[in-house]
Length: 207
Image 1: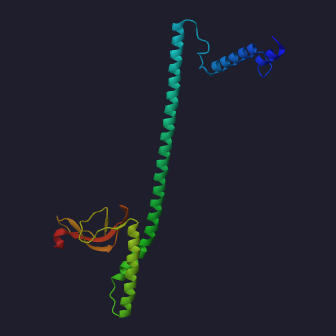
Image 2 (image 1 turned 180 degrees about the vertical axis):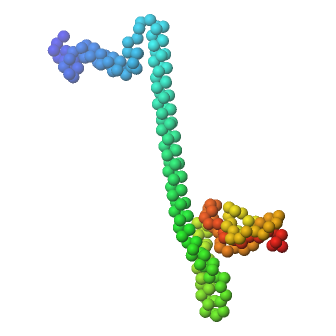
């Protein structure tokens, strides 16, 4: 073979074509062996024994994959629980802050309640009272839009969870009812903020 023909069949690295082909085959075999799971790179010649090794390797691979999947699911569940816990904690903090703010304004509502029941004679006093009532209605409406509720009192059945009595009911068998509201009680989003201060009597006494 001439030098020109020999150069034509040589690969770009300068190796003869046959040598280059053998090198490529060896590299492909090494790459394939490197990608095989442990235990499959050197299988025995016995087909039954080889099949057993392949099946066991497959079982172990599936088990590892399942463990990884379960770990992934647990991580997702932990993350979801963390997010829920953070939302609950944030809601609790916001609710507590709102309760403190509204509680600090109850004294203002009490002052309005006391002022709005006063008798006024002059036109000027009536004008002042009208302005106070408008301010009171605005303040109370704003707080109610945030969840503030007025606890029913006068005429309702006495509830120790909602009413704080300032007197003992008269003796008897009648149901204890609220005869007069001394100071309003409030709830915030269903939770007791302050019980109503009340006078109580028996149902038969009220009649």
